[in-house]
Image (cartoon, rainbow, N blue to C red; front, side, top):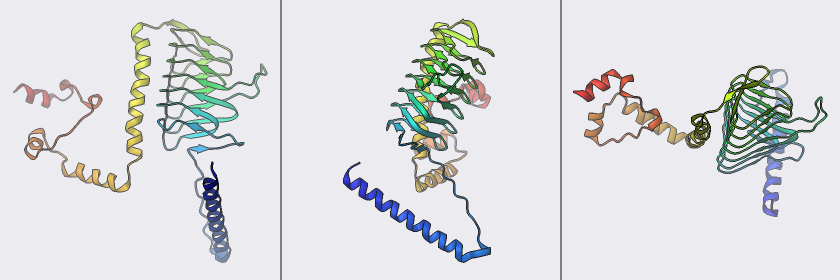
Length: 272
């Protein structure tokens, strides 16, 4: 931070302090009629013990996520709604193109039975499913951790390996390349097929693209949102023929296009 940045920061601190002082005076004057407001102090990015999170400008941090302390998030990665990444007593390192899905928890280890101090390291193009818990472990590139799975201190998931949903990987357990492990405690189940290995990479790509959509939506201003609501209401229940008459072109993402057999009326109309 340069001299100008430090000056602006100090001025901001003075203004906030002045506002807090005025608020305290107002509370005193209200006496017994005081209505105490509790303001949320949630911050998506929070420094701790002089450790600052470092998040690439092309990464997506969803509102409601918490990235705290010594955490690094690489290019194109996404940290979804409700996630907590707490790098307080050690570090968390996340590579590029990795997605950590809603309500997942990533923490580190300072003390455990083995006495090891362990960071958490997650590689590139990794998928961490909803509600997973990773604690003082390592996940290599293009690995997959299923929903609700738990990885304990010293667990190591190799490249192109998969931890099944709900599995518990015990301390210092290694999940080898190309294998699926599941259960409580997690054990070898079978080898991954070529199609499943390809799916792991595709899953990471899909989430990178989806994160761009969510980032764009979260960056919209109030006026833009209200305009889109008005347009959707105005053009609701209009069919393709009406659209062509007034020159409206609707671009529907491929992933949101339903097959004809899901909408029988549409299929019959196409046949006729």
